[in-house]
Length: 479
Image (cartoon, rainbow, N blue to C red; front, side, top):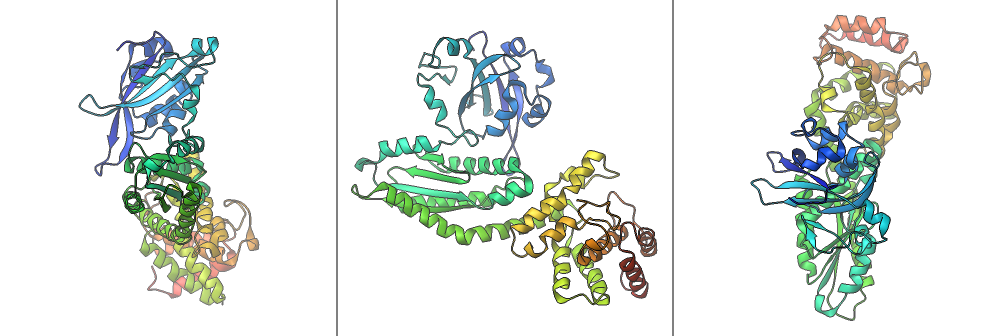
């Protein structure tokens, strides 16, 4: 391959799982110029996953930015100044089908000198080494940086160009991702960005090359389909929704509400067609957004049972134990209902904690423990978006507070802690002690009760601790 002396490229093989879903990339080849320009030993990164390379070389060669932008099968170009190299590069991402395996190629074209000497980007408009050098720099900015889709400016220009009689019928599809705020709040904006990229990937795979797919807002997309009837566009929407169902993003299901409308007559106002598609989309979203949140909660709980010890039997045992104390304490019906919900949803936030940490045998290090402690905060944000769990969102946040104030998140101590949380803390600790966990040795009933007695006045409410021990000593059938 011939290329300018300051240019270099890398080739990655694409990894899929058994279901054919994309997982990651593995670096397969680097050009000879790579070592010369970057001073990175290729042997240090060859054969590694792109996700691992990003960790070790996050700021090098714009790897981090590329990793979070790239979507399988989507071509992408952008220019950036790489501080470590002190030069400006046009980075081109494309795919090569010529070999046995499809490969992703990252090509770095040095445009430093051209940038310094001209207001235009590289002059030749021929395709060289699969890189298209544009005369018009603005074309680089018609893409949304996060998803690789077209942006609003490009859509509006193409709308003016294609709004002609010969393109009829012209269908417009409006789309809006459901639950993106929940994803951002609970799992961070990195996961929210990943959800947007996943949605873009699914849509890109579903439309034709001539269709204009654009991201026009934070969670909104618009698609223009020339020479496409409303019926055909609706079928495409159904296909996308089916793909979303079978292609979750890790532990997050992608849900998109769509509205479809079509222009069939030349004298129809295209802006009114767009408004009709938007109105239909919002009408669908009123219903589907609630369904999506409910589906997401069910999905999260199901996955949580698979990766942790938060099983249905654990929830049922907690309900038995907490109801026993609630009756003895004469708690109100509303407090009993809060306890029931807390048993059900208290650890939903663990879905945002690494599976490796949750299943680790032995003690956790400080960093791992800090990650685990975040689950109460994550659970709080999830509960806020879910009607059934919303009444106990704050209880989820504080269910690991301690009587001595040394719990987390460290907002309350002693009687400041709601009685529902104090009751639950004892039941949860007891059930963990008498049932197998990878990080704890199994205790007998009386060993566990003795531990609760030892932690009375420190971890647990002393009065409720004493009550619980007496109740358990008299309830032989409860283990």
